[in-house]
Length: 135
Image (cartoon, rainbow, N blue to C red; front, side, top):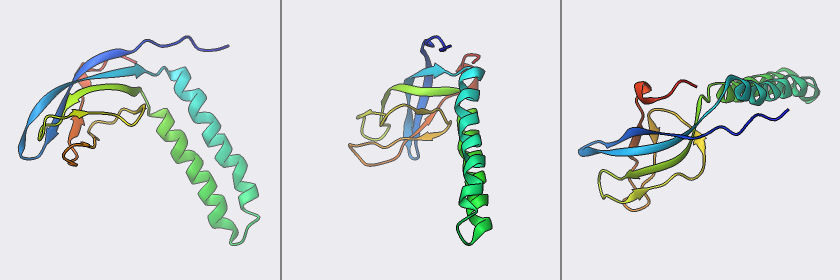
């Protein structure tokens, strides 16, 4: 059974850069349901657990097995915490005024460091928790 396509929402945000006045931005987010997050996190955790016995065959045994289990847990946790996916950004750099872009859809983190291709500074995108819809 496939999950229905989730609609995107737009919320206000701020772009800041030390020493410059903050600018307003609008971000487009895709809310992620609990079902989506579980179906993405469990295979990563399970894969780490399944890989651990195989990795333990390679000397030194314990570090490889522990690495597989920890790696699966870390990747699974990242997917589980992804309440929103950032799919669009309408923002300008506070320093030079150039349009900022996303390299692709990414997990929403606040603050999120962006790269300005014009002035090569790294402004920070901040989305207030009060502006986020209930996921």
